[in-house]
Length: 173
Image 1 (cartoon, rainbow, N blue to C red):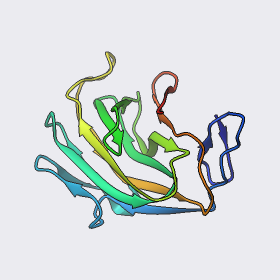
Image 2 (cartoon, one colour):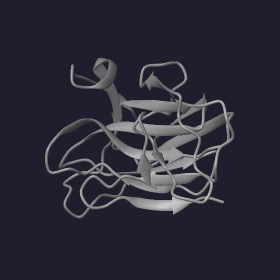
Image 3 (cartoon, one colour):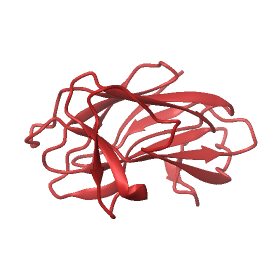
């Protein structure tokens, strides 16, 4: 994957991905973010918009519907955070690892690019699992960054960005 000026990666394929012409940020506190029970608010000036939501409840989820061709999940990462399952439009979930040996704020832990222009839904679910190096299973949701563009998209590429090791990529057909 190559990274464009917006920071979104584009899949490497015969048909180039349309450039993302803008990025819209949706904060954890926005009405578009529909959290199930089991989440609590964490406050810090290092978090996007000053807050994020944290849950250690297996199965707790948040979903958001957006208009765009790409989406990136920003999270807080740490040595005691676990794994999330992230899906787009009800597709096969991709595991995102929020473990990091040191605290990280507004860290991209998942990205889906090359989505068809239009309405999409992202769902983030607490997996209840963790990286072997982590001491906990919590999942933090800070914000979403939505990539917008006005031209057709290439086949979607969905990536869980493993903060501790290397990126994991799955191609959705």
